[in-house]
Length: 206
Image (cartoon, rainbow, N blue to C red; front, side, top):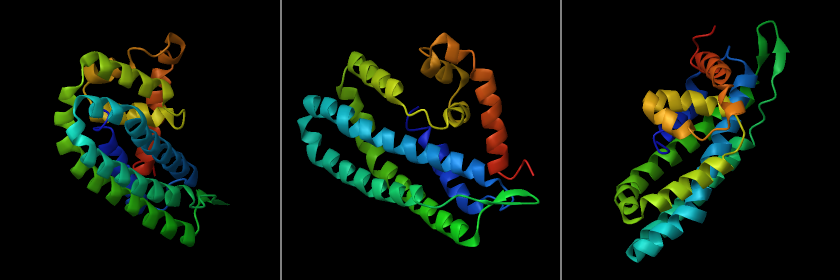
């Protein structure tokens, strides 16, 4: 599931290029900040926590994992570029809108991230899926819980929305089962907010 959720994220990173210009700048900022924070968190947890587990069980994967970490560095540079785009809009009759320069910079940066993620997944998944069979279920569970506990609280409603799109109800429930009850009670509101934002980003809310 963790890799599946990156597929809709990648798609919506590309949507910064395809989204109609009437979409609110604030919604684009929310999506941009969510993508930057969560993609960065994803590969940082792989480098810091998952790779050592795999290396301990399968030392022969070191060279390949080193290459994947280099790709993480390349993605980091693309994410830095995306994060640096000025998405402060100006108010107009139709709401907040971005300047032409900002729209161009956003398109270019978003495409660079999309392509970097696509290339990285093509290299990573053939190695990672078999390698994960070499660690124990207990190790994977501990890693997964550390990832969940450290997930950045940026655009949390979008994470729920993307999980709902990428997984079955049972898969989503298994990922959210350890949410604190006060947070779990907010799920209907988070889902509603995510659905509204995603409609806007797809041009369905205009």
